[in-house]
Image (tube, rainbow, N blue to C red):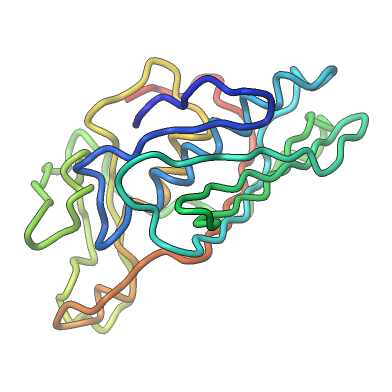
Amino acid sequence: MTDPIPPQGDSYGWTVPDGWQQGRGAFGGLVIAQSVRALEAQLLAQPGTSDQQLRSISVTLCAPVTLGHVSQHVELLRTGSKTTFMRASSSQGGEIRADVVATFGQRRVEDLDFCDMPAPHAPPASEVACVAIGPPMAPVFAQHFEFRPIAGFPLSASDTRAALGWVRAKQRVAEPGAAELAMLMDVWWPATLVALDRPRPLATMVFTLQFFGGWDGVDPD
């Protein structure tokens, strides 16, 4: 990931580097992660929001974000006593290429922590072989990630539309956060690709992610 250009008010910018493409444009997860970074930076400029965390993002990738400079505009939609709503729009060539609406909020209650959706059963990542995935059989951006697939391989014509495995960035950060998680959630191939027997054009156009809990105790690896 690249570092955002220091902001001027509510305007940010960054550069899409070569090697992060998926088809004609940049990998969608990279665009989403950079938008989250800009949103988090702008949030810190708002008074009374230091204890708010990213809770939800809704993303529309309107057009390919191509190599080169990207302009980002961050807009404060509404701020309340415990919640802040913001939008980050990424533009190139005078048109919006990506739009991210985010909700930040404080922790509200202490007695409603529950999860009725168990994680899929999988062996630890250390026990799963790392598979080299990259061009020409996979998008260019895949070279930046470490894949440890367990089940559901692309183009295997499987009757089961499911994909399971471990993934992480090869260049890891000391303290992972929302931007890194949002990026990783868009790395893995879609389950539909498992049922196919030949390549077809696929790209992320709409993306929604909700964040539960915080990052305390999360192993950077």
